[in-house]
Image (cartoon, rainbow, N blue to C red):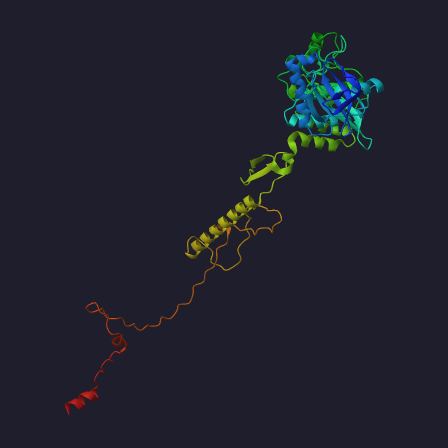
Length: 452
């Protein structure tokens, strides 16, 4: 269909075929201007006739383009072949093989290796779930094993939102019809009933099936037809896992394969936290999944804050919903602190006034106030402790000694101005004249002299 040397869109020269299926074909190509290698995925001519298939194909491109995780196969471009109108997606070129081929060539994998691979896949799913994308087709064939520049293994999640056509009459690793979203052998019970109502917990079921298969070398539910497979998935328990497997790992797979979505892990971050102890560097991977799922916005301070009330002080306390650590709000704390101190000071002043008026049976003995239990205080980080103010009802009465009487001194009357006459003010010189001295009371000698 696309022979070697064919140039697509005037810039991608096809080199060789990487893989082919019932719905499409993937080829290796090289960018003519940049010289970099890419992978081109085309729909087949038959599938391109169906509008729903084309839309599903483009949905993969849009979904993958939204995700920035290193565990997602990066989409570079999209387009249509000019001559035929067949759509294609340009993706990063990966060297390695998917886990289906790894399992076929190496056999069952150790639990530690499975945990490491799944933790990487979960980081990609966490970012997808955070933006409302449910993969719905997680299986070993869509988990590609490649290497980082330092040689460490790297898992890439492929095919977001694209179903595959069958390759054999009894191969339930692939979808049977264009109307089925996902691969029946890895689909959850609710997805087998209706693919339109599934949520992120359907991907958790699929992760459980993949882990079971990588550990045991076969899927947990095997049947001769899709109908029989669906019945077993909905009604039967999965076969027992090897006895040599760590008990905790067995419990993780069992919880992923719970029939009811509510009984599984609430999200992939919780699943990652459970898997972390079984893989090297698992704690870092689990933390990365948690950040990706909840968005680094919550851990950077923009997450919603839940207010709770302390039963002892009835003062609100803020808790970060993600970290669970008290969030310090300087303005709010200082306002509460000022209110407590101001209220206590006012009560203290009222008590002093009441005691000075002689009210109550106060003890007038001079002495030191008895110690009283402090009021509840609010601690503010990086500040000096607040002085505790005793309550007025428990403060010892103050002793007020009477002040000595002050001798009164007569004050000479101040002359006042006479009222104005005919609207004119009197002469100020009159006011400055001295008043005549009172006449001296006559004595006996004065009377004698007067008789003479």
